[in-house]
Length: 244
Image 1: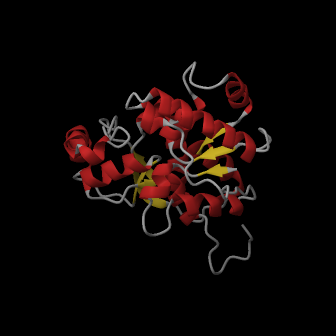
Image 2 (image 1 turned 135 degrees about the horizontal axis):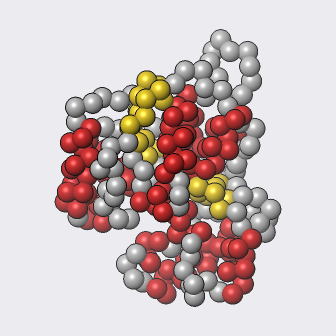
């Protein structure tokens, strides 16, 4: 079961984004996911917790767990989330936020970030030709969830040369602060943009939509989810006779 994050539902690119890509590549790998019909309005609660609105955060977090419990068949299906910050926000809800019943429900749910899910799909997919090079921006949440190394492993399956800039740390988008205070991201990403300025890559990858927006602004290059590249590289070629 797949719950697209608010950021990807709202700020996804006009062309095929990670939502469509994740559904397509999961089906291709023989591990199909489905998006609940009533997913609209669901949110992990992070926008409220990050601003100190405790009551609103608790309301949305409890609502989310209740929905996940219902959508997953009371924990029978893993829950895939496509933005690392949202994955962390729901998987690591602070003590005292959830009701006792919802805390018990969450403990029985398997919350899987899109990077980890893509690695599960990888053995069932065929990549006929990698891109030559890719630069990767591991996000703060990706590092906190111990997904920075898996992100690198996944990227290396898609590109011959993978480069992570030494200064690729926090982009400072901080949820929605990058919209209201773009100077924050401009300052935080400047060293990384300078390190990348003299190089050209075939792909610019990350795993969180707002961080991708921040890095696109900083470098002028089209950052996207690593899942989107995985989907493109595993499409059935016109001459292939092998189903995928």
